[in-house]
Image (cartoon, rainbow, N blue to C red; front, side, top):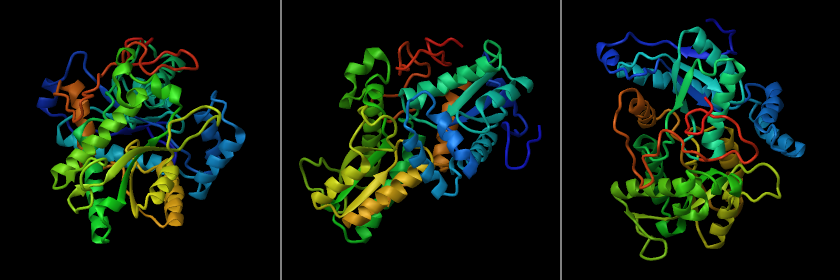
Length: 409
């Protein structure tokens, strides 16, 4: 399959020669292909508005809001970094799979831009594949971060006439996996070393764990219905998982030589202490009358400045790569807010193609392919690999989804 330069219907990454061990370890029914599923993004100025219209279709987002977001993309040349980041992730995954002797071909499809899922799934079928394991570039549980991916996969199967002919499974939400947590914790340690070198006391440093804001109603209905009342934070699984990640990251930082300090008690000023922290949100969109998760990262920075904080470490734990929402909302808008307030801002990188993250993703594949033990560093995990009935429902309308107990496909 040959694609025009610069554009592609789908992407298949060649495999290394199979090993005997990989063949012998094949499960029943065997997974015969892997699929990286991502959000997608425009690859040029002419792609920006059509991309945003696809993303917001049926959500009632005002035109002026789309134009404002379009400006973010156009200010960066009309090209989202996410597709190139996914190409780099594909190469890194292929290399790790080859090291482990996993011969399965690796494809790539996007929800909202070329290569679209329907085209990629058609190509997989033409190549003879029938049982596919999907890797999503989203680590958490909510409608938009899990169920919608499953709906889009089901919709692609239906639109191509391949429902019932291709089975698509999805790896579990991996917020709790060591491979996801390790690069984040390393970034926090590096940031704290930077504030220490600048002579800023830890008591004047605030750590902000940032993620994508979603409607409060979506947050409250995230996760299995029978567990929602048990989740911390009042925001269903989505909020509870992020809080769990924040604590797991700080535990890793503490274990590396710092002592985690409760902001409400104890001394957080010494060079070995972990500063006070909070969960904040970014990238809100949609109807301004609908309640979304707060506080916004910029409001949190202003509040910190009012409390005399001198530095802020911002960690985008809700994202796996440095795409437009991270670059614009944090590296531009939050950085400008911090500069106006006289606060030093350090932004921790996302996992991207960090070796630990790539290994962790392949570990997650191994849970299904070879029956490897599931790893977790939070009390919430390991999260189930199959979604329960009513988990993260679509509050607008019921649609079929793959990889769930209430799936139609």
